[in-house]
Image (cartoon, rainbow, N blue to C red; front, side, top):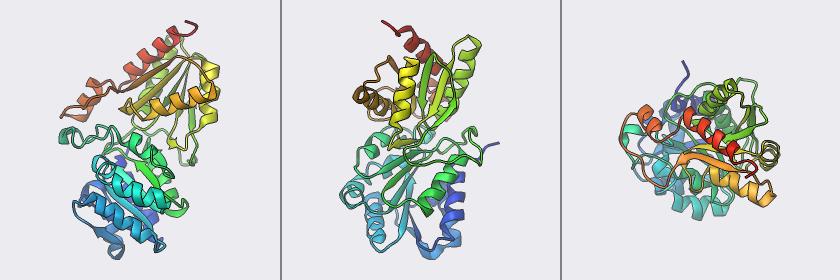
Length: 314
């Protein structure tokens, strides 16, 4: 049984952050949910619960980073990347400060908390801020390794998108993840599926079913949405001639937009279909029911691949 992503993040923050005396952690009164409480228990002198005050928390993190600290800020993505965006832009982005914004409960994984807690716009906001590196975690192993990288190696602004839920394990301990990287998870010549986060395992499931029908699809995890792996996007868009972008995010500003921008600016023209949230809010309910209702499914990816292939040559 896979760990939940929030558990994987909390354990990684404790494992890599506690031994590193420069790491400081701030939370907005949700350390039990974000699991930053695991760090707080072992290094209370370097943990600060600032209360429900997201923009002040991000601003405090900016100040601490100017004193040589590597600062993690944690709370629900929905509030971190909206209420916290003012300080993220004016202080962290502008000053290229060493702050790591870890957004919990991304996508629809806030489920019963409803649209106010769902985060379907965060990637659009964070990738638009200059100097930020933006990662989207796809499973517990990637979550562990990206947290380690941010705690021990990366210098500068970064945003890490985290789900609340357990996601199928896709990677092994030998895998590595770097800014601007991507992972080719399976290869086929008929279409390419660019994906991230929750939709990675759904895309692999779709590719498996398509193969049974004689359709060979490539699946690529664009876990580094900024910087993005432009060469890989261009290579596979041209080679396959049919493209699908699958994301648990609004169609505006996320993965679909990022892939489109690369294809257009690099002249890698091909039919593009999107599996994403239309320009609307979701509803309150069980996570599995919400993802099914709003089309974050393997079946939706299969249909998008077939539509993109049908558009080839038209």
